[in-house]
Amino acid sequence: MEKVIISPLVMDKLETLIDILFEEEYFGFMESCIEYVIDVYDFILTIPSLKKKRTKNSRYGDWYCSYKKNRNTTYYITFNFNDDIYLIKNIINNHGRDYPAFIRGIK
Image 1 (tube, helix red, strand yellow):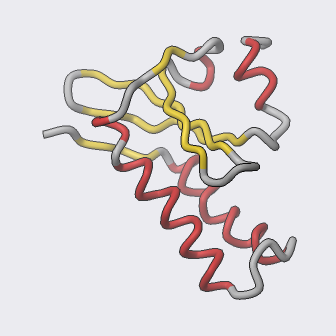
Image 2 (image 1 turned 90 degrees about the vertical axis):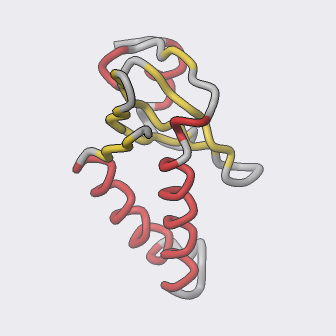
């Protein structure tokens, strides 16, 4: 059975995302922000069963899966895997400053 290990960086980003969503008023209730992030987290746990794509910049990890959360936001979850262990290394979205480097392979 596959095991998914989420790096501290990714966990920190997900926790910070809750605060950002609330402070920037994407949602009116903290509970809604938490539910949004739990949904992203749940998606991460399904990565072993999903189609994987090679990254263009290995500093993010060798592989990625994309998660279109809504019509405006897509998350890119990067990882390495060996045998049945998936190490989730980073998460970025199409709104972040790292997005162009990830897509175009710019270092």
